[in-house]
Length: 282
Image (cartoon, rainbow, N blue to C red; front, side, top):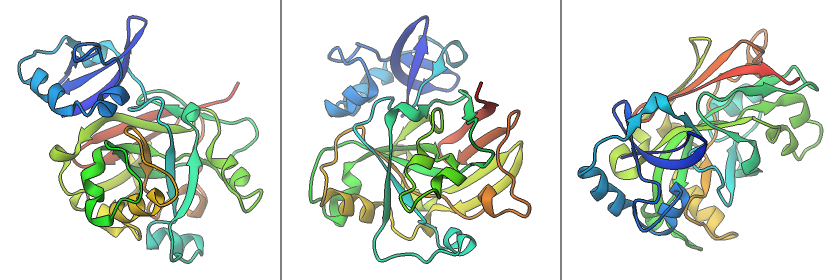
């Protein structure tokens, strides 16, 4: 299934994307109102059964897509998780994952504008695979980690580079307003299959600027889930942004930072494209 959060006619909801239509699941299953609540209720199978008998309620173009999970408990981001990106940045990979956090309030959906802030011209893209957790748990073994994954989506860890490097703690440069595109939808784990067999790429104004296969991660998804679970419990709807490959704007010659009028797209095989225009902050 492809499951999306949306706004339509002034209300928020969620549903299954089928071809160019949406089966509205809002309050149709045990009065569940959001995709996060569906995951918390462990009700993916109920949604699948409902959709098998239903027809789309409206066209996909008749709604606006929100971040897949608009209000996750936490967004765990992984830095320097591809060796080639580490090489272009002159950074060695470490024995443990580089962890930083994003705030839910900076998330935006497919089609919403990324806002280049007034205080910087170094607005960079970072295309990443997002992992959406479907089960709660602590001290999760690597062997059991994948059974906790509900599905996958696209994420753009858009970064304000000069602010990122103001100090050794770079969280501020990762948490500007409207800087976290997340979408367009979640593809459930059963449909997506082995994430390692998929390809990620970035298109800036239609030109490919990043490409990798997802088996190139330094720390794979089971390791990340295991590592974080030793410190914090996972909750359904939590998000992992798994890191970006080589090809970011900062290390191009000359740097090709995003500017107003650009369109940036994250494409992952088996999911689709997350597309966002770029505008200047007013």
